[in-house]
Structure formats: C-alpha cells, structure tokens
Image 1 (cartoon, rainbow, N blue to C red):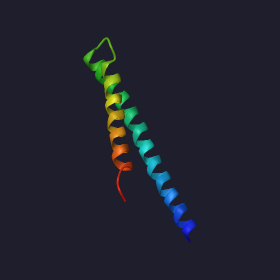
Image 2: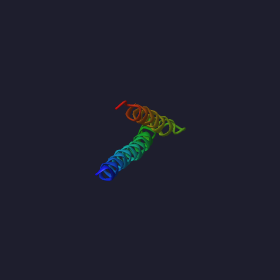
Image 3: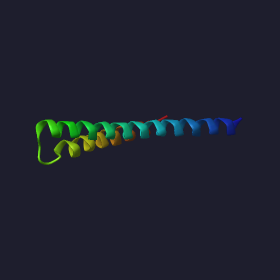
Image 4: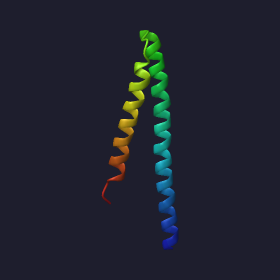
Length: 73
C-alpha cells in the first residue's frame, strides 16, 4: 500500500513539473513571437522586444517555480 502511495506521489510530481515545463515553453514561444511582431511594427533596428519579453517570462517562471516548490506541507 505504501509503495502505491509513493508511486502516485511520484506521478503527481512528474505531472506537476511537466505542466510547468509546458508553461515555460509556451510562454517563451509566445514571448518571442510577440516580440518579433512588436519589433517589426515599431521598426526597431535591434530586436529589443525579442530579448526583453522572453527574459521577463523566464524571470516570472523561475519565481513561480520557487514559490511552488518552497511550500511547506
């Protein structure tokens, strides 16, 4: 019975971190796409938003991961 609970707990953690990974990948893809569109629309010679938006997404996701993993049970 204890091994079933441990296996279930491991599966829940795996699904949780897989979800966080998908959020990070989708967030980065959207940030790069939006950054490209903004840079083209504003006619910047340097891809400013292509750099800034993904960095903001990474910072927010690291904050979220730290907040989620540091919860006391």
